[in-house]
Length: 328
Image 1 (cartoon, helix red, strand yellow):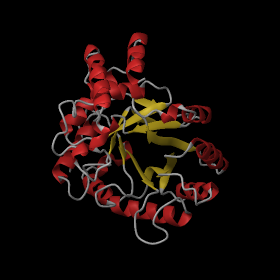
Image 2 (cartoon, rainbow, N blue to C red; image 1 turned 180 degrees about the vertical axis):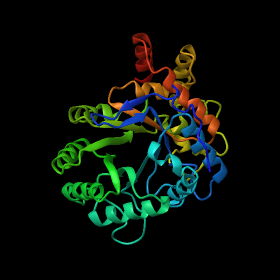
Image 3 (tube, helix red, strand yellow; image 1 turned 90 degrees about the vertical axis):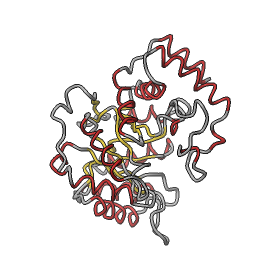
Image 4 (spheres, rainbow, N blue to C red; image 1 turned 90 degrees about the horizontal axis):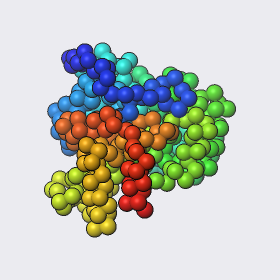
């Protein structure tokens, strides 16, 4: 059995209230999108989870399809969690459903059939009675939003999740879903979306909707899958995400124009006494609606570096002007 460090909450990680709820989340959360699949190193995955918890990271983010293959990350996390069961009440475990998970006509989307089946399967894979947050992982234009909202509300009423969230919803669908969940007496806790220095769509209306409704925002891919770090400054390393022809990050995305911005941003980070990844995380977290940022790491050392971003999340007006000039 794992024994956590006694000083895990002694100023190592700041926490922030999620929207207008009573739930506090760590500023840095651990995402299990990569490196927790059936082909990955289990011992390394366990070390990453333990490292995170020992340093005050209480939030672990999954989805039914994370792997590879589908469901593998939840299985891996469930195995690790068996040795941490004494700390379950200190953890926020989230999972999602929306993308293809099995064959047939009920394989994805936002239908009641799919969501109910997905939450049951996720709980079984992780060996849990409930998750803390269950998300509708994507907007499904073929399912009435009312149906998805009612399914999410019922999942909470059945005790399978404490809170619900949505992810990757367009602005107007978000507005409607937030209203429906509130009407169903199951207010939306949190919205998860892609947000980083290079991807800023959320600033075009979505953040305003979330502020108005008191919903927190959690940013995934805050480092643009590693581009906003020192990983690609000297080319594309072997075993990196961009080196994988089947990965989400492709070589052609790492252009000379992008890397020119990365190098200039890195100069500002150095002047701040941070790595580029630390500054990029701090930049995401500077926004008042963003309560936490999700990081995915391949080693405990990488996690340790990223966690230090929470030590300096303040930018001067001059720094913001310089960053905006580079990004423009």
